[in-house]
Length: 273
Image (cartoon, rainbow, N blue to C red; front, side):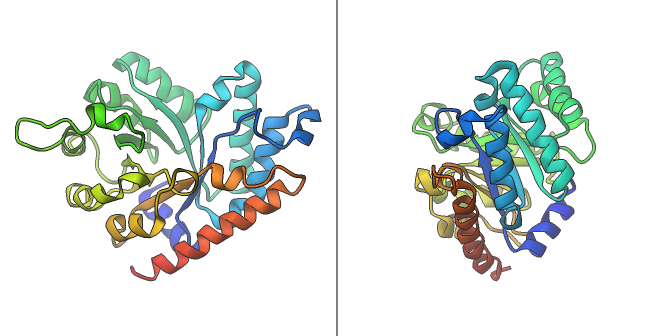
C-alpha cells in the first residue's frame, strides 16, 4: 500500500485508527476456549466488528509466537482473513526485529513474502545495514522505533548527544538517509505527546505510528494537536481498550462500539486538515 492510498483510506473512512491485535489466550472470553481455533475465532470476530472504523490492524507477533505453531497458524489465518475480506486495511506486523543484514533479510522475507503484511516494526540500534533489507520491497514499509512510551525509554532514547540533542532525534535524522516518507514511518508513543511537536519538525511528512491511547493513558487530542500534518500523518493504535472491553458473548459488538467511539473523535480531528 502506498502513502497516498493510505491517506485516501483515512479520508474516505474518516479515521486513522489502528486496532492492535494483542491477543492473549488467557484474556479472551472463556466461551471461545471451547473452539478448535480460539485465537483466530477471537481475532475474526474483532476484525469483523471493527473494520468499518479503522484503517489498520497491528498483530503483536510476540502474542502469537508464545503459542508455538498454533499461534503462527492463527496469525497466518488472521492476516488471510483481513486480506480476503478487508483488502483496504493496512496490516502491521509488530515484530520489533533488528539484526545483522542477512538475518534481517530473512525476517523481511518472513513478513513481506510468506505472510504478505504491509509493514514491520524494526529496531534501529544496529544501524543502516540491519534496516535496509526491509526496504527492498515495493509498497512495503519499515516502521522504525523512534520514541517509545515505556518507562525504560529514558534509559537510552533520551541520552544527550554531543550536539546537545537526544539519541532518538539522531535516529530520526540519520534514518531519513535510508528511506523517504514513502517507505518509512516512525513509532512515537502517545504518552510522549509533549515530544511530538519537535519530532514533527524533524520528520514533517512521515507517518507516525502512535501506540498508547486508551489503556495506557495517552491523549488522542494531544497527539493530534502536536503530531498531525496536512495528510494526517498519523496511525493511532488502541489495543486493550478495544479488544478486551468486554469478556462476555457480546465482546465483538462491544469492541465495535469502542472502535466507533474513537473513530468519531478522529473524524472531528480530521476536520483540521
